[in-house]
Image (cartoon, rainbow, N blue to C red; front, side, top):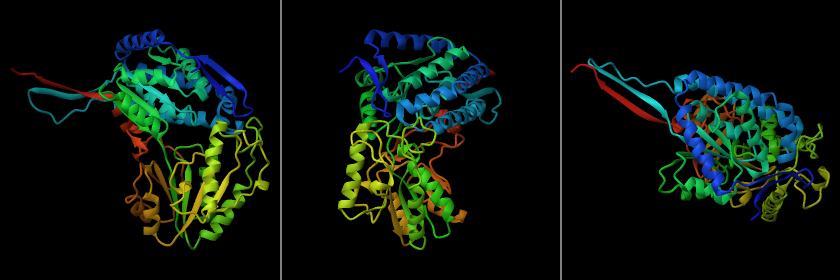
Length: 463
């Protein structure tokens, strides 16, 4: 194993960034520094902690233009969309800072003469955030900011592909005047990451990644009594009812399927369309897909960039080829998009019909610009197919009938139910999942609960 983390840019396969992994003594020193700093940080008033974190958000936003370029080089997102992630970062930050005082306020039971009673929210101690590359600022801020506001210290291990994101977080907190040691960006290999989880030195682990990675986290944490927040895979469905606004559904679902080149845990990977709308829906969906511009993400005309890693292309192509061999129809021809070398990270989008749940493309996570579309005959048919998955992050319903969306949503096995939108996180709502998508919660007031522990005060004042 190399002793350096390397970011190979998907733009041209060049080495974009390289940093040495921390060794064991450096890791031990970082953990001890975080532990010592946390004891002082939790004694800082909540308004002051909020103020420092707000300053860090402001510092991060001042780097927006440069960050958009860095994201293009690191993970291939078109530069025209790069600033959008920072807008989302700011939106979530503002919401979590706004919610902090109420979420962390003492819980006071009904008055009881002769007693003072309340429940205080205490920080856990050390929070270890292990963040992915696909939405590197958004996934990280979900836990980092509320953990710090709640009085914890945070250790961040960011994905190797987006290692500069961790440095930007560190820079922002330094500019904001966060005390040394309270936040630390650690460049770690996988074995060192697992050893930290297994050490018992951290009290909470926030992991976003694959199902296999989540299993490694659970195995490493066994016996430590550290709590785990796991956001893992997704195979998110959409159901287009016969009363849906067709043009709105098509436009939104094309974006939900192909934004970020389909590399989103809550991206749309399978669509079920009422038989009355199926043909026009597919026709419009394919026509709009063909309007994407696949190319270098540094080009402002590009709307579809490469995958983050060239190695991700072959498994996706194999999934599509297997579906076609089993009878699926591919609606995007090679001639619809410019050709790229087979060993590059560039992959054209694909729309498949005549698919079934016997095909991996409709059951296994694709994490690329591919979507399967099926015709359904009834609401019950759609619900059964939407629930026929080992994952459960989000599901969207496209309809003009709020009552119908509510009725269907109550039967769906998922963490979030959308109506007439998809692939979006509202920071005032809980972000969570079921089944192999993981467990735990970030965002909203509820998100603070996993980053704190209740401590009861029970005082008899008259003796």
